[in-house]
Length: 176
Image 1 (tube, helix red, strand yellow):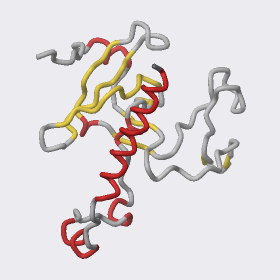
Image 2: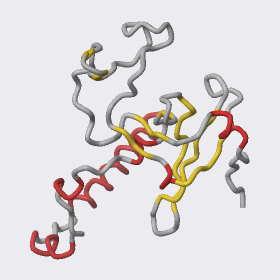
Image 3: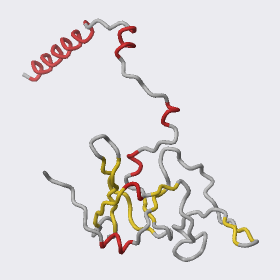
Image 4: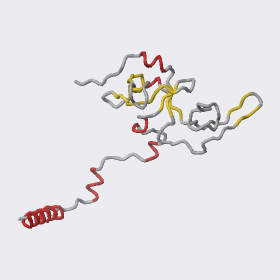
C-alpha cells in the first residue's frame, strides 16, 4: 500500500517535470523588449530603506530619547505622510502609539553625542561622542570609526518632549 503511494508520487513528479522541460524558451530579443526598465544603482544613491526606518530611535533636540519609529503611513501614491512613534513603556509594555507629520522629523547620520548614564564617557551603554571644541580646548571622546551606513540614518530627531508626546491622542489603526 505504501509502495503504491510512493510510485504514484514519483510518476506524478516525473509528469510535471516533463511538462516544464517541454516548454520552449523565448528568444532573448523578445525578453529584452518586454522586460520592465530597471534603474541603475547610481539612481538610488543617497536614498534610505524604509524597512530600516521602522525601529529607528527618536530623540528630541536635547538628545533625550523620546521613543522609536513603529511604522510609516503613506498616501495612495506612496508618499510618506506620517510616522507612528512608540512612546513610553518599558520593553514594549505600556507604550502607546502617536502619529506625527513626517515632514517634522529630521534624520541624522551621526550617532547621538552624550556622556551616558553615569556621566563617564566610557560608561557601559554610552554611545560614542564626536570631537567637540569648547573655547580653546578640543576634547575627543572615543569615537566610532565606522563609516555611517548609506542605506539608513543613525536616528531621528523630533522637537518634542516625551511628556508632550504621551499627551497627544493615541494613534489606532483603522479596522474598517
